[in-house]
Length: 484
Picture 1 (cartoon, one colour):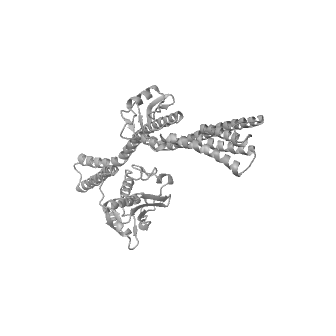
Picture 2 (tube, one colour; picture 1 turned 90 degrees about the vertical axis):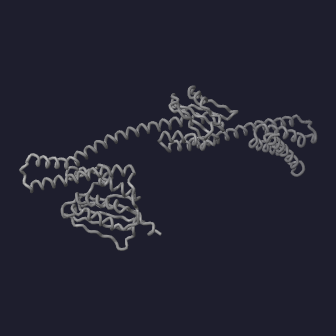
Picture 3 (tube, helix red, strand yellow; picture 1 turned 120 degrees about the vertical axis):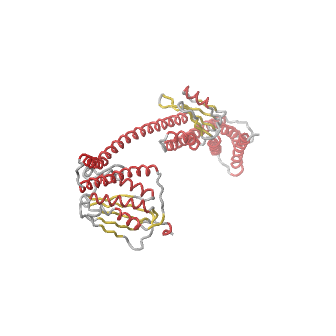
């Protein structure tokens, strides 16, 4: 005998025992009128109907009617009824008990269905949130079967798209969700449910268009829920595809803009030294009678502009290496003053017209850095401050510890940067709108500095006020030895 049969026998036995118990209480302990007895029996029938269903409630009604007749309707102790009014009372009780059982069962069934629908709606909401977690098509297709299993507590799931060769599954086995069945459901566009094997197949429908199919094993979901899940998956797939197309379009547009900016940068930055070199070389070739001082002057121009051109090319190559993550840092515990000294020595020519002041607290803790790379950051900031500041304007180099990081700042008294441009100043090839033609450069210096600082797990930024100068700052983590 299986568990269901045992459970059914227990319920019927408990219902009969309840009726007998009520009859014995009113017969031997509490002596009440037949109306009270009938209402007590009716209450028992309602409780049985609410908890165990209509069939058990009808059985309880019949047993209660028999007990009511035998123990409480005269002649007592027999099933004979002498007074016709008692016949009416008995059948009225039996009819009331059956009707009340039916109403109670219907209410219980509707409550159960309502709770099931509510739980399915909650699961659909959770499932929708998961579908929106990624815009990458490949990631989404691999994740959807797992989302279905997690959200609806099914055994396994699989989806198939006509434009894809693979079947995306939640597990390693097919579990009855064969490719042939998925293809058939996609072709027919109709839900197919196999309740015996607990398999469900649903088309992924986007309006009237079917974009694929889904299979679920291990659960008997309602047809409405299956349709909703299929539609949600179809919408998420279409959304991911649209986002990928938009991303490719945006990437193409960004490449075009980058190409345009790069050409503009090359035009303004590379043409100047090439023009000077070309002019100097042409003058030397066309005027063989130039004296030594004139030749020396032209050769000096060629040498300086060649160095400048070489530096521009080096910056472009370094920017490409930083973007590709191919630069290895030799990080160690060092004092920031080491990098500052190197940068100041390198920038002596550009700082010749600017008094500068270095201010660091005593006993400044060491930081984790590649000295040469951080010196390069400081060189970029110092040259930037010198280029954009008027002659004899001072430059300040300061440092302080804040929240387990060392903040190093380079302040100038230049024209300042507008709020709108402060968020763009570290972008590749970006140069201030009003200084683009006045100051030579490629717009790569600050972006290189940003890439180096971020490679050190630091941050870089700027605060500025138009007409009063700018403060460029960057942070570096303190040495772990100091933290300990």
